[in-house]
Length: 165
Image (cartoon, rainbow, N blue to C red):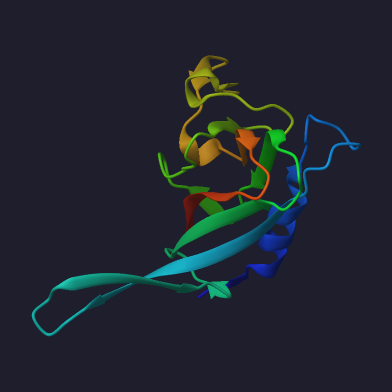
């Protein structure tokens, strides 16, 4: 059974935090932490399935991993148009519709984070047929959350789920 160590993924996700439109002279101070949890399903003696989460230090094919990116603005001014970029581990498949983030615009990339669009606008050209097609979620390589404003002293979270290939 192939196992994937998630420390590398966490480092890449953390490096994806960038871009405060208010510039370097402003006083917002946005920090972020990442939690990766794997979903554990168990059945009791009556066959009832229960689900719980535990920290995911290693995962195996078929595991579901839930990522939560928590952010806070410890500065004394609001942070405006904050972009949180998150690569999707190539050994995992994004679970369609699982990205969340109250008030955030959620965009996706299929080109390694070079461009981001709404899912309905993501297309790719099938090399076999030469036809332009809608990009299915399994082609997503990155996720971006654009948070309009993080007021001074406030925090929040965004996240998504993926399945290990």
